[in-house]
Amino acid sequence: MNMFAEAWGRVKAILGVKSGPGIGRDQALVPASSIAGRALVTVVAIMTFLASLAAGAAILIGDASSAWQDQVAREMTIQIRPTAGRDIEADSAKAAQLAEKTPGVAAARAYTKDQSEALLQPWLGAGLDLSELPVPRLITVSLTPKTRLDATALRRTLAAAIPGASLDDHRLWLERLAVMARTVVAGAAVIFALVLVAMVLAVAFATRGAMAGNREIIEILHYVGAADAYISRQFQRRFFRLGLRGGAIGAGAAIISFLALSTVSSWWRATPSGEQVDVMFGDFNLSPNVYAAIILIAAAVAILTGYVSRTIVFRHLRDLT
Image 1 (cartoon, one colour):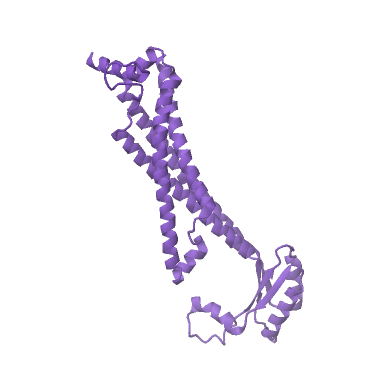
Image 2: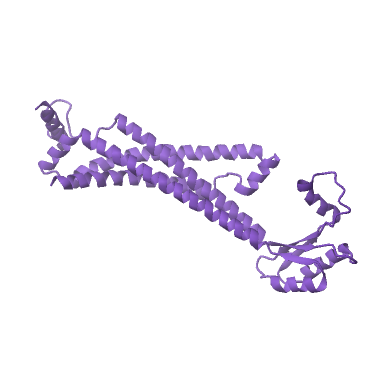
């Protein structure tokens, strides 16, 4: 009887029927602060942080991959292999001239012997005498952005004029970069989906715990004629606030993490390994797309938290009828 009287007193307070000093309509159906509520905020913050990191990493790598593909697509490479009885320097100059005369080519730059040998130093080491090795010559061909190059025609022209000449349009590299970008985006999508599933389960458990703690009040409100939408809306508002708070904390932590990574990468960029990371993954600077994605994730988490809570409570009330 004491539990029923206490529950009935809280019901009258919620409905606005005063039964004592200090009791009024401002009392909420769901307690404003509880250990479960604080735990849920922590869980939502962690999930939002992980989801924001996954989305931000996917955007950063996707942007770096797009920049790579654009840069590779704007250039081609002509390779002149040494051939007995021919002057490789003259063949290189001739190949550069043929390339510059081709529509769609903006410029062609032939590497000298020293420059070609310098390209092999990262693999063979410095200080080696490469004069006896048949080091090929490279010619970089820059393409005009608005003019389409007929690579097949240029390849035929080079093959007919210069034995040992070959044209590389970097198609294999472009395909590998595209596959890498799709793989990263797919992995980030899987991580994002798993984080959302874990968050929904956490909200569901928290909602059921809140309903268990207020079971008598919910049942009395239901049987005295309170609309199911009204009861479920109380839970939705409470859990929406919890989700909004946790989402804001997680989003803020994600933004701070990206800013810290950007600062560290700027210090690390002067090292050889830092330059490679910068080329592959970008400089970790937050673009407007990353900011927008993190903010949208935080807002979506808050809305999803309130919606899941409302749905669970509404279904429970339907089962009481």
